[in-house]
Every structure is written in structure tokens, then in C-alpha cells.
Length: 129
Image (cartoon, rainbow, N blue to C red; front, side, top):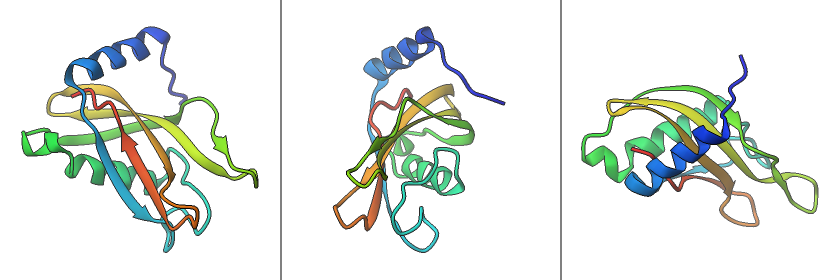
């Protein structure tokens, strides 16, 4: 099943973000099964799902009562940004997220924290809840 979002869905998500926006972020070591030693995980991987769950648990909105119920399908948005070695350095994804406040598309990105590729940074800069 392929997830697709229309331009109007994207604009609705941006509008919600403008009204109720917040940032959630998490860091993950890039070794020991967390994306491998030199790769950013795929959008729909278990690693990405775990990182997104961690980000929700640690979000300021969680302290105000936001509860993550389920992460549905996750898809890639656009093209990955590649480095000089043709390896992914930045990936943007969208997840179908269910919370106690409703169901919304959540856009997030993953990138390297440093040039050594020791940690992956996941950020949802416009949390629509």
C-alpha cells in the first residue's frame, strides 16, 4: 500500500504546524543496529519507528498530555540529499501518526550529527499537535 499526500494535505499539515507547532528530536548512535555504521535508516524501518517513538516520548507536548497511540505508514518525501560519496546525508519522511489528540501526518527529517557519522539526528520541526 502506497501512502500519498496531496498538496492540500501538505498545506493543512503546515497550517496546523503554524498554529500548534513544536519541535521533537532524538539522537541515535549509528552503530549496533541503528542504521549501520554509515547509513541513515529508511523511512519505514524499525529503527526509524523507534527513533520517532522516542522523540514523541521526550517531546514537550508529552508533558502536557500528548500520547502517541500508533505510528502508521511512513513514506519518503522528495529525494534524499547525498554527500560527495553518493551516500545519504539527509532524508525527509512523513508518518501517519495517531495520538490521543487525533490523526495527522508528521513530517520529520534524519541527518548526521557530525562528519564521523557517529549519530543520527531525527527532528520533527513542525509537530501538528
